[in-house]
Length: 144
Image 1: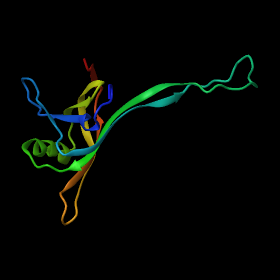
Image 2 (image 1 turned 45 degrees about the horizontal axis):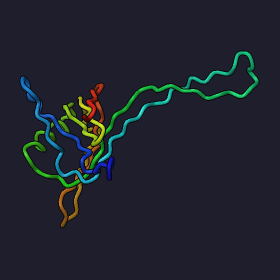
Image 3 (image 1 turned 60 degrees about the vertical axis):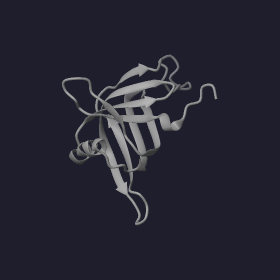
Image 4 (image 1 turned 180 degrees about the horizontal axis):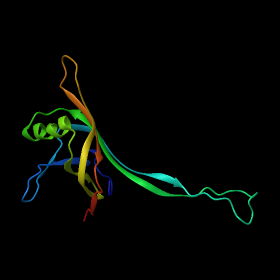
């Protein structure tokens, strides 16, 4: 287990919005499943050969728009931090967050809740699932 990392250490930490002063980041509590998607659109740069237009055409591409999305689900845990976070969900406003990727580093910046669902059955705990998209370019700090 030299380089393996625990999935439960993939975290999204919500900022408290403190200004002035250092912002405090708190784990989104209750997460059981989580994922962090780092993707980029593919921009087609394919051109037929000018010297051999009837020959084979090599598809070429370059990276386009990048996307950073954190998704997770788990048990809804009522707390002061969750209540403050739910204001952003209810009002569709941007909040600061950190995504901690164990063994790699931390992505930090502004996010918004692209979707957030609460559900539960009569006898089970209230569950949630959400997807959070970057609202601006994120900074990355490598793990030391």
